[in-house]
Image 1 (cartoon, rainbow, N blue to C red):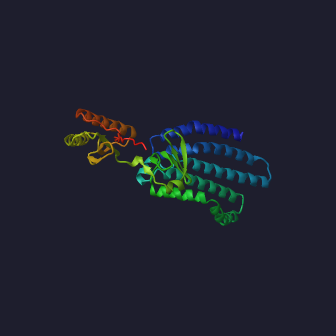
Image 2 (cartoon, rainbow, N blue to C red):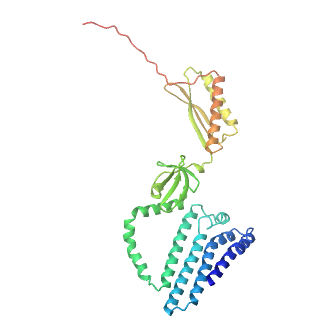
Image 3 (tube, rainbow, N blue to C red):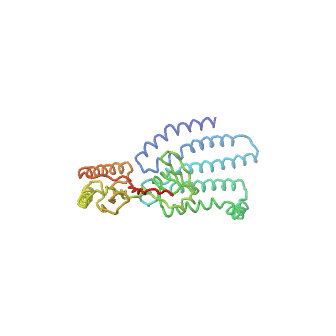
Length: 334
């Protein structure tokens, strides 16, 4: 009867009281709904455990059995409390977006801090349960200290990855969501842990890169670009006159200066050098946008305008050519 009573109490608490609390806290600070979501399932289990405990206490058991039941109950309560705290300390509920901006907490630290707190919670639960059953954990902790050196020697790669992760966190060469490129990988950063970094490539494959590898490689972070470069050479034929070359350079430079999507700070258009089969004009500028598809659209528009200038001036783009001179010598008979 006691167990059935507490089962009914649990159902009433979840269906009515929790719904009312969620509705009341819907307009409150962001932590209230997260706390309620974290403790809802543990609280339902706690009510059932309390009912079973009270029912067992009414049975005519021996003193030793009663003491064991109390220890089991206290241990289960510790596990339930640890479960609730563990659910609250997940990646999404740990630090709200407002607190991240207020304390200037980098997004990289959130999943790592969550994993550290999860480990601490599990360790504390184990220690408290061991202490509840009068288990001496001092020898266990001392054994961990003595075995730490052996573990460190056996896990050199793991330690290298951990320190590499610390370097990434402290120096912040990239963060979650950035588009990066190294000598071995290119893609968007999805997750950063103490051991490795998960990068999703443009083919949607997930690439796991050890942190020690990333810490030693040169990293290009495309997401932090303020502008994107356009740089190439335009080759005209050697039949181009000096006046046409000067006019072409000036018109291209004027077109880039007046282009609304070209950054006006750095625009270079110069007749740079005499190539093997062309007169090369260097074109060097930057787009205002850094988004890849928008950059390609701007670059295409620039190329089409340059083609229009070349066609309007009746100039010709040079192709790789080579002129061979053959000398005929009269054959001599011996």
